[in-house]
Figure 1 (cartoon, rainbow, N blue to C red):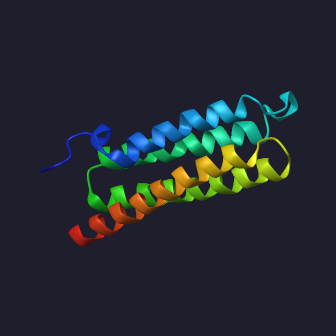
Figure 2 (cartoon, helix red, strand yellow):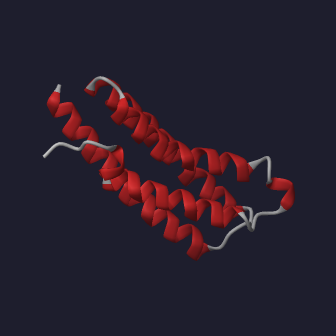
Figure 3 (tube, rainbow, N blue to C red):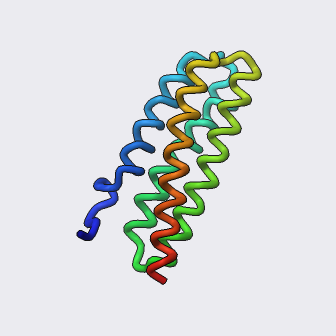
Length: 121
C-alpha cells in the first residue's frame, strides 16, 4: 500500500502533536524569552512535521531523504532547547521528560523511514 498523503504518516501526526505540546510549554516561559528561546523552540518544533510534509511532496526519494535528514536535525535542536529550558528553570522535569520521550519515538520513526527510503534507491 502506498502512502498518498504525508498526513497518513504516523510520524507526521506525532510530530504535529509534539508541536502543540511545545507551544503549550512555551506559553509559560518568561515574557522576555518570547523572541529568544521560546521562538527558537517553536520554529524548530514546527520544522519537523513541515520537512516530513515537504519531503513527501517532492518528486524523488532522494529529495524525501534530504528532508527527513533536515527533520532529524530539527528534532535534535528541539531536544537541546528543551534541556536548556529545563536548566534555565523555564519548565519542569515532567513536562520536558514527557516531550523528550515523544521526540525519542519520533526520532526512531524517522530513522526507520530513512532506512526504508534508502532501500528504495
